[in-house]
Amino acid sequence: MLGLGEKTGTPVAGDLIKDGTEASFMADVIETSREVPVIVDFWATWCGPCKTLGPALEAAVTAAKGKVKLVKIDVDKNQGIAGQMRIQSIPTVYAFWEGKPVDGFQGALPGSEIKAFVDKLTGLAGDGGLADALAAAEEMLDQGALADATETFAAILEEEPGNAVAYGGLARAHVAAGNLGQAEVFLSAAPAAIAAAKEVEAARAQLELARQAANAGPETELRAAVEADPANHQARFDLAVALNASGKVDEAVDQLLDLFRRDREWNEGAAKAQLMILFDALKPQDPIVLKGRRRLSSMIFA
Image 1: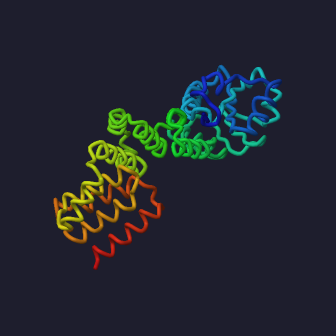
Image 2: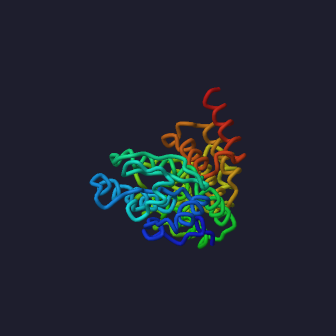
Image 3: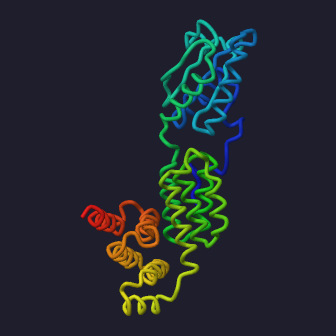
């Protein structure tokens, strides 16, 4: 199983925030910043604004969950490095990336500006392996390694609870494993910010199709009923459900398009609604989706 950046969980505060010294500056700041941005807070015990800025910086760094680190330097105990950095007033904050200072500020800032400062730094190091982890999880899901896919999507969500791709992926993994009830509960609890995301909607569509598949009728009998009476719309609709349940998605789309052509208003537009569910459940660039949407559009606007 591939974890996001090989992490097993959220880093503890001690991994992210530490007191630095002149002796440890090279390792704690310069070398570490070659892998992750490092914020250096120059402060002193007698500095009033430092007492406000310090906790706010710590909170913002902790919230970034390993995408940035913080080193606190007491200027009274480390006058040499403070002199090298030309610290003239405190608090002074520098951000290091790839061994060099890339940003900074002096004085205490409001929380919103501190967050913006940290957010800007987190973008320097890329996504921390997020894209690779998502791709790996999708590959696991495609190959039927459902336990590994579930674990990887869950690990990504620990890092980014609002990641719509991972949220939808985890729901699809539950569906693929036959855990339809668990998938339904999980999807109903989707954060509002991503509840309508296409990746989450795709998972909902797959859940609906899985429920339909569980109640699908016998394909052979339904096909015979349609051949005997092409105007039997219910039989044609049920045949499409059965075809999709057996993996014949392209044939299911054909039957639904034929039903739409014959009577687009049947059962309150059920043919078009079912087509939308099928299209949503597939990847947007799937040839079945592209061809099906073109054919549907040509019928609608004919």
